[in-house]
Length: 306
View 1 (cartoon, rainbow, N blue to C red):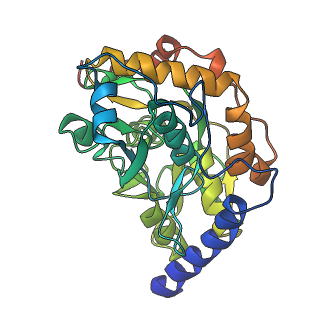
View 2: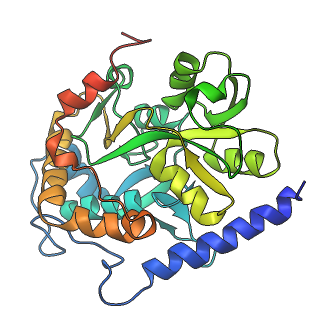
């Protein structure tokens, strides 16, 4: 069994080498401050007084909750201390369209919704799947990314698909959609719920668990860090990501939907996908512009809170 402290520093180093190299690459890569939609860093747009957008302009910043340990969507660069990733870059685009700075705070699966409700953050961009249950507590933008549920196991494992998880120790994040997915599809699995996916990775590497289940793009980040791991089995779910917005803020939702629409249509989505995901997996993205919010909600009908 490897010393997990040594493994943790190895993972940090590899993550830095892989992802920071991309972020600091040549002229063909998107810039560190992506521009989106119509503002593009020009004159500050004007919003009606009393709207959240006008208030954010008065504050000069928008606070966005992201993951800090989930490459390639949100991770902290150990060399610079900056948070980077697909969700982070989209957050910068939204901030640019507001004409303000983006401030990023860590939001794990279990505290994303409370952070919106108590005002800790203004928006959530934290690999958050759109579900009907969550939609009773917050509002969502239209989908901006489509992931798929998969299983990660060590190469050579006898786990080849969802049925093989029965009787096995399986890790996922507390309050993620996989908490219910695994209970439904592999009811005899021994489910290990943790705060962050980096904990799942360490548990798998030190053989305390047998597999991890979550979104394919999150699992791909783990494989990039450790090529002794592999995806197994078929897709379990379709997981559309949306920007989390405080419940009832129709003006902010309309604004964010407009930015996401532009993001999907103006080529910026394709650039960010290739930068953070495509170059590592060689698979084209599902097109989120073809899925409406209503279609996304139908994938995860009401289960608990409505």
